[in-house]
Length: 355
Image (cartoon, rainbow, N blue to C red):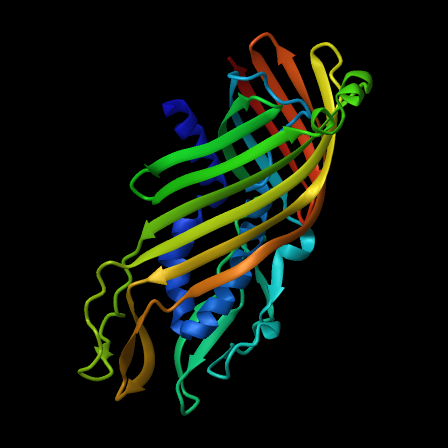
């Protein structure tokens, strides 16, 4: 279990290792634009991460149309990589519907990098007060340069009577070192063979197996923040909250998957093909009090305190998918590989132990 958690941590750090840097550094810059504009900018920057994680969490549920014998158990550890298309590596800030209090600085172009874009800084933005005076400037964050979004899967499957399997995914809350926050995962699924339920004769005669499976996964991530007022600034008035403890990022990613799969066992090699539907949702927010500069009086920056200023709730993936792959049985060891065409194309590979 300890090695499995370590593998899980490595996958998450590869895919979101820069997320704490973004949260503590870049996001503290974005919120200078105010809650509504910061939410739009953060959502645009992180969009491919949300989509890639969504299709990744929905992968790896099954690699054969056969169910397990009653009481048999399989422990599976796998990882996926979702390829980010070129169009999702940049975004145009002028299409986000930003307020008139934020604008591109003179000489800055409108194209910004997303999380998986190039490692080049984005355009410079200016934040203005109600009179149109510039009170803050910041640059949109650079990308990571990573071409794909990894996601981990750790699951245990139990064979039940009547050609049914049940699967559980679980990782307890795990601290990913001192600088990467905490993560947890939970999920469950069920699979049943179709032919034995419809016609026992067909099940004996037909040279392939057909099954239907459902799965749901939810991953949670938290990261503590420490964002304080700019040096030399002052609260706008005495009503402003001055307690900035308890700041954190709360993120939740969930995915639902439904598949129909057909497979044929050829000695120790089982190729398969499946079609299905998958969806995913993201809920990310900044929790706590945050000081944002809203005015400059006699050369002194004045800040207003905003509580829970950023909240992103959206459906990232919603559509059909198809998968082709194989399962390789070597005594009690099993090896898996597959390729999926969905909103993002992805591959999945893993190893399992059957008992």
